[in-house]
Image (cartoon, rainbow, N blue to C red; front, side, top):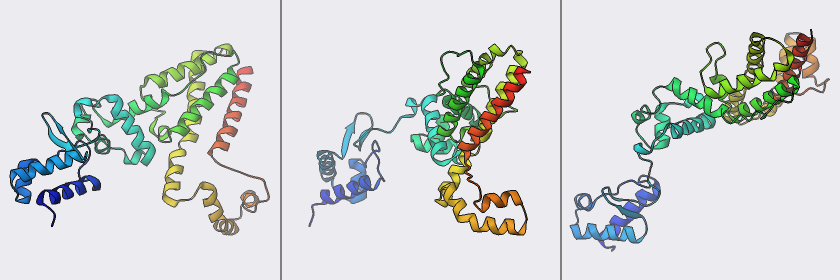
Length: 294
């Protein structure tokens, strides 16, 4: 029969291995062990020593005996940057619908209320997330003097950011724009690229807003697409193949000659958000060039 202290060690070891006790968590004190297991204090002390010998626990001054490993972050270690980084991680992993202060606090292993000392509201948190994502945008350090080439490069750089952060597009407002420094930096760069055209600053602002609106508009489909893949387990192409018969039957009931050509496979046609972005950006710049030259 195992000695009493070994049964205590086995039980606490199980709690650690199952995740019930995590790195940095306090394990039962010697006094708590005597009460829970009905053993003498000497037995409890021996159990603690065995746990330390196995490397499962360590003694922390002022805290007690805790599970070995990196200590969980203390609330005093919190910063706005860490909170924003965790919020971005939640949004990219599970979508903005799952983003909440409670979810972020759980991820950081701190109390929910402690977050509000650094980020007073959810709206301010989203602004900080937007600024962080747009801060990754690498616009060219200087203009080429060719406004079309500069706008094309900037739009592609922005499209890359939206793909990296699918939650970003739907989170940004056009009619009530969030005041974030990196969005201002982007707008200034685009309007500066239009300097060689000679158009006024008001028109440059309109072009900047429309270009951003186009890229953001296409990008707004990225997060729903990602959610659809998570929910169905199928890519967009697989889903379309799966729905081919249903679409064919639908157009048979509702005559639409142009769509029928597409669904019957008579045309070499592919469609996704990347193709739409390429087509739309080229047409936008084509139309802008005609207007500027006029």
